[in-house]
Image (cartoon, rainbow over all chains, first blue to last red; front, side):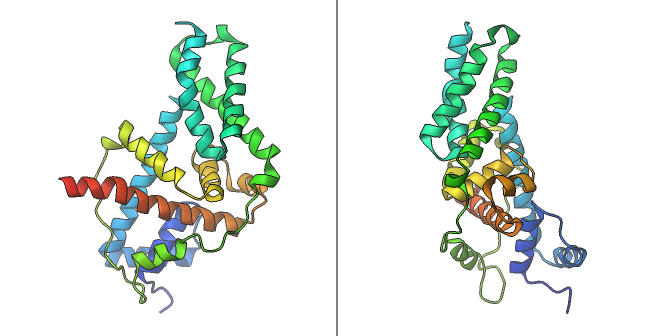
Length: 63
Length: 188
């Protein structure tokens, strides 16, 4: 199926999304997978924690 | 407090960031000296300490970018085969694309993300990245340069840039899990 992705593929997409916009079909595939998977949303939250950690670290560097 | 003694206080702090970004002690010391000299040339312009610190970090970033430009040939990126990223993938996933072990819940670590120890671990993890990868990652996350500019400064293709950022993020995640989030879960 064209929108079917493995967890390995989905983590790669999630990491890529930190730095660039994903093509529409990948965004759709991601959404479908995340709605049905238990592990990948946990990985997604880890990335979001890292994002806010880096943001605070940057802020801490110049406050 | 005189400006000299305040500057002395920040010197080590500035050096940490310069080293992390440049991955070369001599260059980092140059960047910090130039930053401090710039501050000494206008001591009257800082109303308070936090203003001074913000100003110093701003100047340091400019000096660091200048050095990256001057040293472009030395810092320009060569694809180093076998940097262990494939092993990282293999550790996380089975051959069929499923997790070898599912990712851990890091919880909602609002408070601890502000702690000094956490920043120390974060910096140690960034320091463990291979030099070229670390520079690229810091250009993005500390200098906050846009992709096109990083590619231009380091003579990188966009694909190379994204591959390096991707690997850096995976490694950082792994390192934070091992040295912070995993430990905390084990302790509680």
